[in-house]
Length: 224
Image (cartoon, rainbow, N blue to C red; front, top):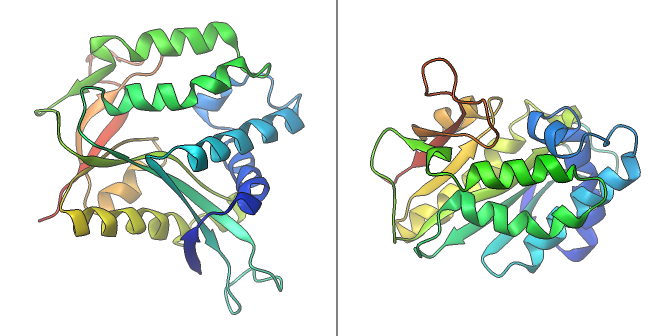
């Protein structure tokens, strides 16, 4: 398997990977309730996310491609996963605010549920959206992940691990931390790679839970 920087020619394939990977995702079901009925629009939406990542000067899009000898090799270097990494320089804006801003252009997409998108944006701007168990990282550089996806046929084969390790190596070189929000499915991998849960992120109302600590995990990696 080869991990490399994405090119513009990779956008359709990376978008197809994302559409296949996130078709049953909780957040996509909330944001794109019509995705099953309009699969072509959904695919274009995913392509737009990859394209925005490539146009963002703070981001780097990487892809995982098959090499000869890999399981699933079909004679071509198919893209089976991708990740959009971004580097925050340490301004006042938090990671979640940056993610919302980076996805703001997508809100004009007719596939997006306008009420749900507005609800998510309002929720993410509340002080209670990010609940930390320890001090936050403020005004210092850090890496984060805006999006990561592996095609369902290649999940469980170490593709996501390789994509995340790419960013860990970057963070090691610069001696800066990584902070990200993990889906329930992704938390185990991040834990195996040395990330620690430092809080929870609520991106829609009702995620607090009965103990007030519910939400998606905010996870942090630091070089030792």
